[in-house]
Image 1 (tube, one colour):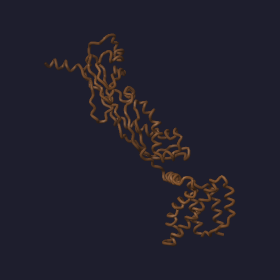
Image 2 (spheres, helix red, strand yellow):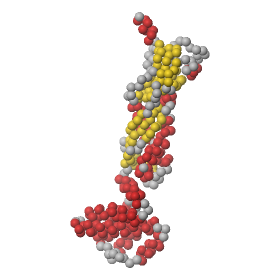
Image 3 (spheres, helix red, strand yellow):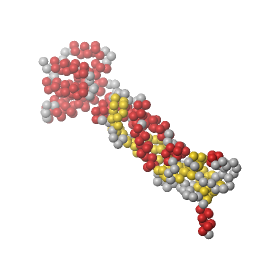
Image 4 (cartoon, one colour):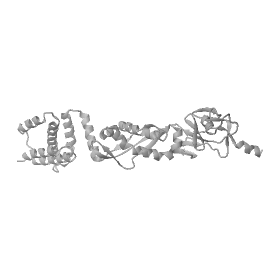
Length: 349
């Protein structure tokens, strides 16, 4: 009886894999000292692929279905083993099963701020994170390039490799898209599409199919975030410069009211309002001169007009400080700043 049990264990007549849902991507069927019986049954379930490997060389690949193993169903293995007729004896071959179901909610993120090159701002440092999903698209290539002869290969084993590929291709994605970074940062879907276009061929090189990737957050340096906020504000008012100046003045008034001359109550509010209106007038003139096709003529006409209001020294100094800040941020040029400075200083005479 013991002899019969020993003999029975040497031959395999059913080959199958029941996944346990633990994130296993590749699993080698336990062969030990056993051999596959001629005519054995192979069961490949949905979302699986089975690969036969002979002496380290990938032979036949089976998709979902039930198969009886013969020379007809194992043509490559038959050739490798030089079977010129139907084999009748058991044979040895490594059998690997691969899970092809989608692996969802895989995380990616920048552990540190990374530097990218942008055509508008030059070097920009950013942080970003999101998730992605993938599946094994080419089991033969995945076995050759990644999993190899390991008994088990899991999603966890692959996680670091894939996240590294995502981070490595962020800069290339932005550069190849040709889209200014501010537009990508304001539209995370567009950012994700550019990143996916860069990653799909990279994933395919190792037998992985990228199903989806999202960008859930992009953190920008403070100075760049301020410019993005201003761009969004301009988009809200469109090309109406009057509305834009109202928006700008509304943004500036609370800041002036807080620190205008240390005033409080009605006096402080009045000084803040006056400084805000003065700044709004200065910015409106600058923008009108810069954007109008008849900028020179309009500027000359403005200079010829008599002053309609007297600006106090405190208002002039406050306005100059704010114009200096706009110059430092690149919103005003040095020439524009100097011109407005000279104009304001004349009002003190």
